[in-house]
Amino acid sequence: MSTSTPSDQPAASVLVINSGSSSIKYQLVDPDSGQAIASGIVEQIGEGVGSVKHVALGSTTRRELPVPDHAEGLRIVLGLFDEIGPDLEAAHVVAVGHRVVQGGALFDGPVLVDAEVERLIEELAPLAPLHNPANLTGIRVAQALLPDVPHVVVFDTAFFRHLPDAAATYAIDADVAAAHRVRRYGAHGTSHQYVSRQVAELVGRPLEDLNQIVLHLGNGASASAVRGGVAAETSMGLTPLEGLVMGTRSGDIDPAVVFHLHRNAGMSIDEIDDLLNRRSGIKGLSGVNDFRALHDLVEQGDAGARLALDVYLHRLRKYIGAYYAVLGRVDVIAFTAGVGENDDIVRAGVLTGLEGLGIEVDLERNAGRKSQPTVISPDGARVTVMVVPTNEELAIARQALEVVGA
Image (cartoon, rainbow, N blue to C red):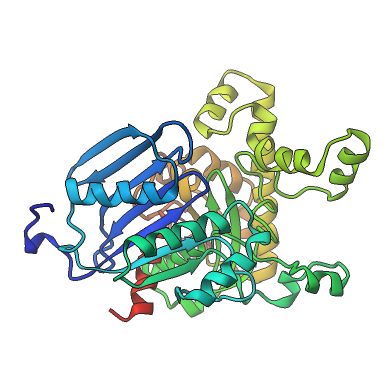
């Protein structure tokens, strides 16, 4: 047990777990203050040697050791809380919040985990085969190790559950779509919801009065149109492959490309899946998927890197224009996530030329990385442009707290 004093501890905290196929990210959150009390990640689960990082009490602990499965990974995490701190009992953990990618058309908000919820997460696995099974493994392991704390699931798709039918429906045979649950589900919903609510607080206007475009730009990237706090459109679809150009994903592409590559290049479905999800996007065009490396290549005159950046910005600009039309009026454009918060070249580049829509960027305000909410449009601009750092862990913690009623 750690030696933290009672005055150091929050009235209640939530342990947030994001279980991936070969990793576990975690954060101990004080939902009231928004503070991350501790955080960390276990990686290379199931490989010969795994790596663990635990950040708490002003220090970072790193270890390399065998992590054969998620159960051992979580046991290591809980052991680090005991050994290094903060002490989970003293931190008054009232819930464990779990991120699950795909809630389908079944879940429009957070839910307490029970056998039926677990069954439905498993049933929805074909819609997110890389994510839902791993998410479910994390839930089951955490329940076994922390049986006396309620567990809550927060779905990435929940914010987009009530998209208008015209936005959620693909124009394919209706019976086929219904039989196989083919529709637009979106992703990154927890981030889009959190940022859009933050925007309303920051600009001092009721959420119900605002029309917003939220740009979640990381290695995965998505855009949303939010009218009065309710999602009206989003760029990701049945899966997170659709939409914007991303680090390694193609985003929007003619579906016939799949048939063409299968028939004429002899590529299997699995090979095409790998191509579009892992060998496309910025990486496919330039050879790198880190924007810092991309900008370095552009500076060196690399034509592939220049094209990759131009394609990325062009697609983003198209979505901003489309969502402007969907909303009819835009009050705020908010950038968030790793690229959105840290890349002033992308932020300025995508909005250049949109002055006729009332969208302008003050280059001095835009300069540099933004760790705090920042307005980057000039005073008096018709559309307020902001950078709003996302905090999905805090959003999950607060939603979990609401569910357990603590």
